[in-house]
Image (cartoon, rainbow, N blue to C red):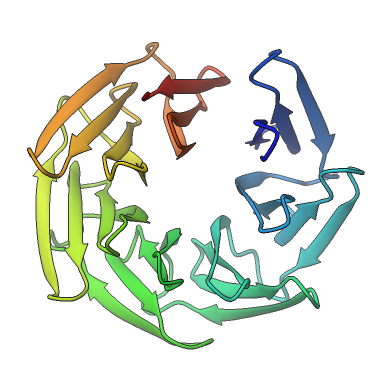
Length: 273
């Protein structure tokens, strides 16, 4: 948020939370009966947008008034996961049950398409030129959205590696966490080249985020740690956290990396300045 606050989802209680890092004060919004929110991002107007698997809907909350807008999918339960805005202001999202889709925030129209190969779509990210890429955990591929109903699919370098999350660096190269292979992978769209790096320790690389210095951050679900990878030196630095944290989501802003500990209900802040 522009005021420095941080939004988070509380999946087990069906709530959206807002943390003021300066005071430690927390406000939570009840998303309604049956809600199980997964991901949350902040839209161009500053409002949070949530992928809610329990409601099978995209939910947005007016940051000023707290008013909810629920945009249901006209599909079987999609197991909604993550979302990203493209360069034209459309919201794209993934559903691990085998769907990907788009919301037009201006009209509230929701379009959904079946995924190539069925189940798997999980992570999603936007490159600096506004292109959106999807990562398929079960399918072990990443896919570039090419038009409203077409994906150009690229398999991960390790068969069955499990592309859980994806993020772009400043040059448009894609960084992918391979959940089953315990690796961090880089894909260069201009050349079609993959490079893989073994994540340190007893890892389960979950989320990935690239900061303003083009350092690549990985949340280690099994190892209860954050790892920072320097693409220039090709070296990792590890920042341990509490045992049992089960760190999943990972995002950031200049000078800060934020993680979510699903095992111990904590927000994790690592200052990089």
